[in-house]
Length: 267
Ligand SMILES: Nc1ncnc2c1ncn2[C@@H]1O[C@H](COP(=O)(O)OP(=O)(O)OP(=O)(O)O)[C@@H](O)[C@H]1O
Ligand SMILES: [Mg+2]
Image 1 (cartoon, rainbow, N blue to C red):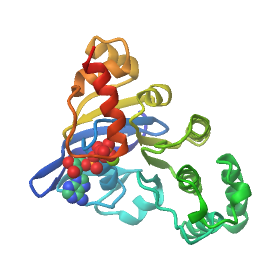
Image 2 (cartoon, rainbow, N blue to C red):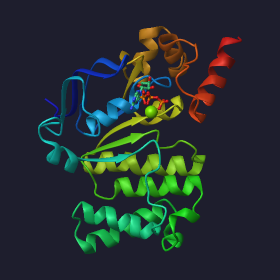
Image 3 (cartoon, helix red, strand yellow):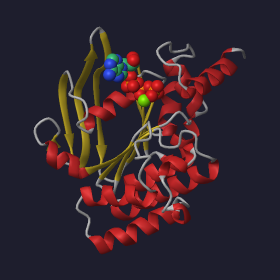
């Protein structure tokens, strides 16, 4: 039987009156690339925050790399890397220092660290800028640095919350190729969210649709089309999550979904 790397059982998170995550259940196998898709406010980031020990669930059980997330935080934290929805690199430090700090935090041996920093910064095409303070970077460059940093300690599980938001096509392709390689070569388990459905279609082994805090369907892209009797992942997605707008969020991401949904609705 394949090893389960991430497991959520009856996961619930309430913020006051709002139930952000409402009885979510799923399991992700070792080496699997799993996508979490859903409208703004669906509960994606909240789920990731609970899996990565940043938020405490209201109820339910979470396991990561065989460890109980509530009881074994240290081992859980050593098992994953995360790329946040909002950039979290330090503006005052140089790009290189950001990488180094992260590597030291994870206790990566110096010679290995040096090699990896160079390899990853070249991958995201920031090597020439490694000695620049991050505050001189564009949004996309910060994002690329964030991605390089998240990959630095070759974690068993990598969480990516909308990693490609605002990135150009070239960088997106580079990033996904690298991540796929990581998953193939090192058996890294990948859990990501995106609002680009075509990205999930191309990259993910399995996809879960989440809406209003609940998983409404899970499967491969093809299985989801079959389940919904539709011809594309986008159609399947809209059929299951509806084309109504979500009020909660006014971010740029929402605008993109809004345009997309509007285009659909007016047909
Ligand atoms: N710290 C918090 N306090 C109160 N409510 C919160 C908090 N964090 C999230 N929420 C609410 O929980 C719900 C789920 O939010 P979450 O950030 O998980 O959505 P998401 O699926 O990641 O959306 P997006 O695609 O916009 O990133 C939303 O209704 C949100 O307003
Ligand atoms: Mg989010």
